[in-house]
Length: 120
Image (cartoon, rainbow, N blue to C red):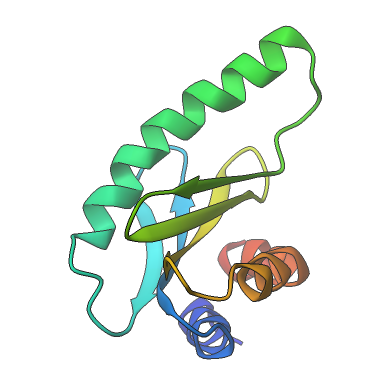
């Protein structure tokens, strides 16, 4: 399955999802799929959050709290769940505030290996 097909399949499984993407830690999207209207620039949000994620990851490692697995960022209008895949990539779902966060978490966790393999 191609990366685009995989992301499209993941997006279709999650109610209230605006986008799902595979990102590099250089904050460049490897690929993304969007649907609906988020009301903000999803790509810019992901790039800006990518910078924050790198700092959080560095801090967690610095204090010896183990490896970072996932982060959820909630705002008044949306949620973004980010799952670390390896040292090069992370995947993220952008959801409406009332989107199915549990299903997004499940999709990211269950499809992590497939996402990495699709770009290897």
